[in-house]
Image (cartoon, rainbow, N blue to C red; front, side):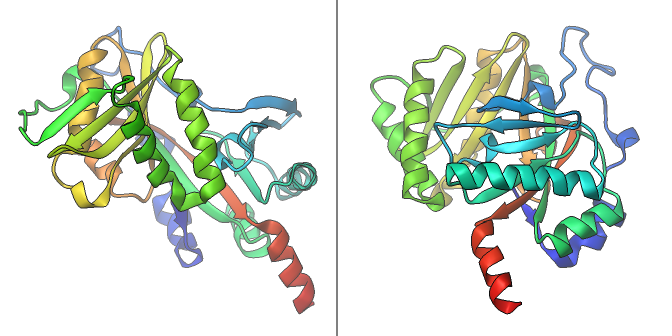
Length: 296
């Protein structure tokens, strides 16, 4: 998730917040068989373990370090008091489980009040970020010519170790324990018919990968990446093209960070924006609290 620096907050409030009326609804002027998608169609790891009138707590006991599967999801935009109450609950829970982060996801297509955003960022010291949901009819994905140096394959027993090593190297950015935990998830997903793993080679070297999550009417492209030395060669587009070719009758969906360059690529590839969602994250909050106590 891309996080906004604090000096961009006014820009976020005044200029970057997307109005619901500006969002194109999937299905307008398109084939009737295509599915209208929302964030409910996005795959989430973790289990719902508690629910209140205004939030849902999602927890993944098998992957405590994964922020995206350990969080509170608000049903409606909270007041400052409601946010603080949810924060106290999650803080106490994570202290028991040894987790060092706090993450909150806000309702789809809902904007902050200035007061709530200012409180979360300046008083509670959270980083605030934005994701955007995109969808495409596979028939609208650009036609691509083949490139001799690029080979795109489904992950099989024959290339599974290449895929694991590629993902492991990518995940090391978040720490050794995280990378090891993710490796076990990739192994589990490899045996699950709802997942399709794809690997790309460039001039014989493993260069990029993605996972596709297969549902009845949608396929989600998740975790797509190309390692830096092989970027800007059309590899990511050709991995996506394989997904389009394999599932021509499904709606292909993905999430993009609201500030990242890839979202511009998706627009050029004819993906249509379906919605947005704000998130708030605080990492290593115990250390921050200790420092604040020392200052006081």
